[in-house]
Every structure is written in C-alpha cells, then in structure tokens.
Length: 93
Ligand SMILES: [Zn+2]
Image (cartoon, rainbow, N blue to C red; front, side, top):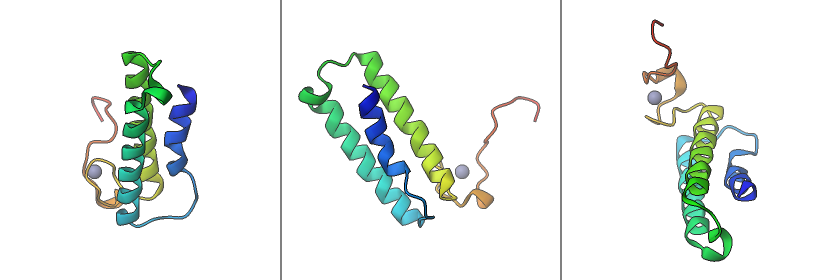
C-alpha cells in the first residue's frame, strides 16, 4: 500500500516550474495511473476500502502540493498570486 502511494507521488518530483497545461497533463496522467492500480486486482486486490481511501487522500494531498510547487492553485488552476480560494481554514483570520 505504501509503495502504491509513493508511485503516485513520482509525478510530483522533478524540479522545474511547469506551465498549467503541463501541470494539468501530469495530474490527469497520475489520476489515470492511480485508477489503473486501484482497479488492477493483481496490484491492489488485497487492499481494504480504508486502504484505498487513504491512498486517494494521500494522492490528492500530493497533487495539491505539486500544483503549489509549480505556482498554481489546485482548486481553481489560477496562479497562486491571483487565487482567491480560502487557503487557511482557521476561523477568525
Ligand atoms: Zn484557487
């Protein structure tokens, strides 16, 4: 299970800043890869529903960080300096 989550993170490493088109293509590639693993019983047949949800959670968090490392908001795809999404979920700020 840990290994599958790490494989889904491979796309999130690599260094240079990418365009939003490249970031979104990487996101879609990673999503289809993850779907492939989760529906391949050879790879993931022993996983529980909770395992699968944990993997999807970890993958989504990695994608949020991947977008942000490249300067984009995961939710709205704007550059972070133009994003108006609520970012810090702390009441009173
Ligand atoms: Zn945003």
